[in-house]
Amino acid sequence: MEIFSTIKETRDCLINLKKEGKTIGFVPTMGALHRGHISLLEQAKKENDISVSSIFVNPTQFNDKKDLEKYPRTIEDDILKLKAAHCDVLFAPGVEEMYPSTLVKEPEIDLGNLGKVMEGKLRPGHFQGVCTVVKKLFDIVLPNKAYFGEKDFQQLAVIKYMVRILNIPVEIIPCPTFREADGLAMSSRNVFLNPDERKNVPLIYKTMMEAKLLNTNKTISELKKWVEEKVNENPFLKLEYFEIVNSETLQLITDTHLPITGCRACIAVKVGTIRLIDNIAL
Ligand code: AMP
Image (cartoon, rainbow, N blue to C red; front, side, top):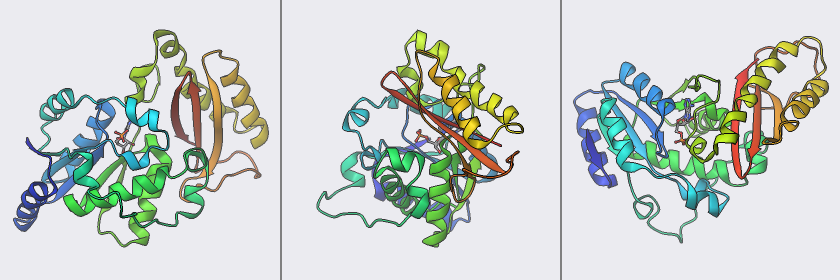
């Protein structure tokens, strides 16, 4: 695996490969890699000649400075995992390389409703930061296809929208959420859960799956209330939101005939100081 920390080396290497007619599959990450990340890489390897991953803890997408400071950084271990998965190229820049000037304000993209609901509402500026870094990474890596997890469903919708409105010639490939055996969605933040919290968090996925079954005989507000009670009766969990949304526009669905199909149920739960998000298809 080639490892680069500068934009120039990465671009030179990848431009040469593209000139040879090779296709590039790209998996952007913030590191602290787990099997969910590796499943994206495996799909990229299957569908492209060259697999590229990036590791960059992007400061502009953190609305909470403490969250940025304590975000897990395990680069040595990540490199071993990427090598074991036969990743061809890793781009792992420092902050200065990606944001050389703090004076230049990055242009904002009007995300409309996509940026206003759920994570957009609770984490102001988060998706602008995501768009900024993903656009920069696409300009450096020049991928044919880029792989994003459904685990971060709103992020996936935002990236698909950005690519469409800016005419970025990259195909966005959604990848299914990789889960632990007990249903917990894998996340870099799971390492912060203490043993008691870890024992209780599978309730998040379990509650959503049960809500899916109740989808036929309740109104949406009854369903939301049921989820809220179910999550909050566990002393380790505090519901931030449970929403049913249109899978493309993320419009909140508040009033319709049940059962609801073709939509997404999205949840955010606080576990101590940690926030976990998850979602399922309805
Ligand atoms: P992150 O490092 O958390 O920014 O995630 C990098 C990419 O991996 C994003 O596209 C995430 O949606 C995806 N990802 C994170 N966790 C999972 C998971 N459990 N299953 C599938 N994809 C995931």
